[in-house]
Amino acid sequence: MKNIVILISGGGSNMAAIVNTARREAWHDKLGARVAVVISNQAQAQGLVFAREQGIATELLEHKAFATREAFDAALSMLIERFDAPGQPALVVLAGFMRILTPGFVNRYAGRLLNIHPSLLPAFTGLQTHQRALDAGCKVAGATVHQVTAALDHGPILAQAVVPVLPADTADTLAARVLTQEHLIYPRAIAGLLQAR
Ligand code: NHR
Ligand code: GAR
Image (cartoon, rainbow, N blue to C red; front, side):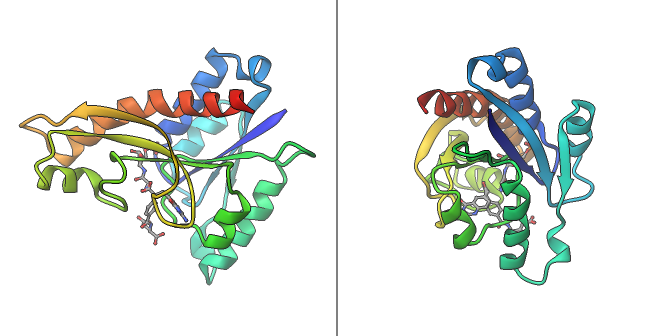
């Protein structure tokens, strides 16, 4: 069985979309994969509540408790390792995870570490993507699923979705429109990656 480890920091709606799709599409039987654990770096992350309700293991690893990024990432690796099976390294999925990871961590998970970023990369790496797209006068916006590399938001692209920017949009209304598409492309990209193996 291939374990999927999902890292969140907040609402966890992308995580929920992955969990719901995995159930609906019987990933357990068809892809030999299951969401094994949801890990949050924030105690108040709402996504933890949903994961618990679904009977999925949850872990809280607060970055605040660590003096350095390296120390936090080392502890995170130790947690994730519990979900690596022999010959079956876990797939690590960032879903609204808000901590930049060290090159050491990223290299260790090369090829099995994914992120969804709320912009059409390579445009608008980093934070406040929706406000920046509005400020730039973009007529379309979207989201990108990519492999994570040490260069922030620059790894190989696996999937993208495009939405229109409407005249009355605020960062919040645009974010909500993009998020509905994230919920479609992230589970699909993960299933595609699992199938390709
Ligand atoms: N780590 C690496 N090495 N490479 C990537 O591509 C990563 C990553 C970690 C997270 C998600 C990313 C996004 O999709 C992601 C991609 C957080 C920040 C950030 O500045 C930037 C990009 C992303 C996630 N975080 C601040 C920090 O100091 C904290 C911000 C906060 O807590 O609100 O880590 O956008
Ligand atoms: C999503 O839009 C995701 O793309 C974005 O945060 C939201 C999380 O929503 N990620 C980042 O900005 C990463 N820096 P969710 O917690 O409901 O999935």
